[in-house]
Length: 165
Image (cartoon, rainbow, N blue to C red; front, side, top):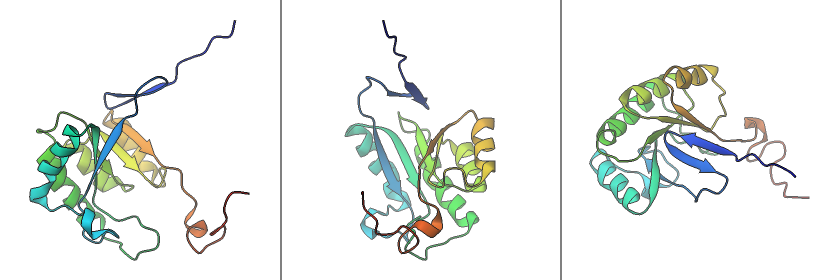
C-alpha cells in the first residue's frame, strides 16, 4: 500500500494545497507609475475596493506600491514605497476580515508593512535581499515567492522570445 502525504500550506491562516479549494488573492495597486493606470487606487478608494474584493471571494488582499514591470523605467525610492504601503495597509489592517499581503522585495518597506499590519510578504524577486527573509521570520509572518528569470534574461535579453520546445 502506498501512503501519500497531504501537501498543505498555511498562508497567514489561509489553508492552501491538496484538496483545498482555489484561494483568490485580491490585488490593490497604489503605484501611480504602474503600467496599467486603470488599476491604481487612491488612498480613499483602498478600503471600499478591498471590501468589495472580499465580498467577491478574496481570502487575502495584496497591496503593491511599486511597479515591477521589467520593461518600464519606474524605479522609486524605498522611502516612497514604504510610505505608500504603510498608508494603504493602515487603512485596511483593522477593517478587513482577511490577511493583508505586502508586495515588496525590499527590507525597509517589508519591515514597515509588517509593523502596519501585513501578515504576508509577497516577494517577486525570490528573496534577492536576504534581509527580507529574516524580517518575515522575526515577525512570524508568511512569505510568497515568485520564480522569475534573472534580469538579463527578461524581455529582450538572453532567452527572450523563446517558446516551449
